[in-house]
Length: 384
Image (cartoon, rainbow, N blue to C red; front, side, top):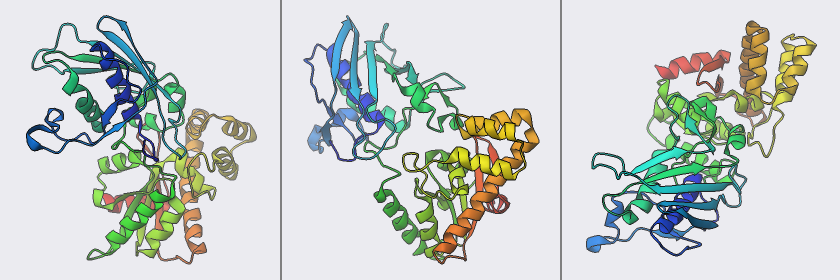
């Protein structure tokens, strides 16, 4: 296995392949070979002189036939040496033949969400990326008998609890972890190679004609998606992962003059407290930052205690909004302004004074909930 480990879709595909093997009467294989580059026709592997696809063994812990036409398999996520939310997560996949078999116009693979698997709040369907679906296609379809189809039910026993530590709900995903990801190997946002990739991309953009005067910096895929939907040009977007402080300095060094920080309020609030590496394993302090800013806002002591005791920034602000909507709005604005002020101070420590930094925060309902004074100007300018 690669040192970086694999993303959740890979472990689901491995368990699904083992369960399919049980349906087909195959002996259990502890490390089934999987294709991890799901492009092209999965039935064309090595046909007519074509190069065979790269395959790697992926561990599966157990698989069994539950009844005729119904099998279960389990894999355990291993994300490599880095810190990752899915480390050790058990992935249960139940596979069964479609009865009756699908018609030619029907989908041969039906996906269902069990306990802990994230679903779209609007439709109730399993939330999965195009990459996850292609990965299942290329590893299962070549082995499914012609004219037959399968139903896959995914269960992640700890998924619901783990999802509370993500911003999935900001994109309408509820009840568990989404089966997302755009590649097989884990790309760790807290790892040094992520920062190196950001610096290399900034250098590439700076070398273009006209340089890179404007930039929108996001933490992850959620920010990329929402910014694009708001009309921000994809050419301005750059995912920094959790290395926001060093990324700010690198951007200034490469000639960026206007930079917009665009992110989930539960992440960017750390910058308001001077925490410029936002991975939750390395630093937190969100409750303390929120409570301190609320005190500066003049919010009474009972509400300050409630803010500090809340389970998350999101729930704290929601409870404050129920007490006083204007107070909650003012506090969000203060947070955004503090992000801008602390970012400017961080840059000044490294001798960078020329770059303007604005901040725009969104909440779990995909709503822009706060804009700093500069963030408002930059968002409007970049949308144009």
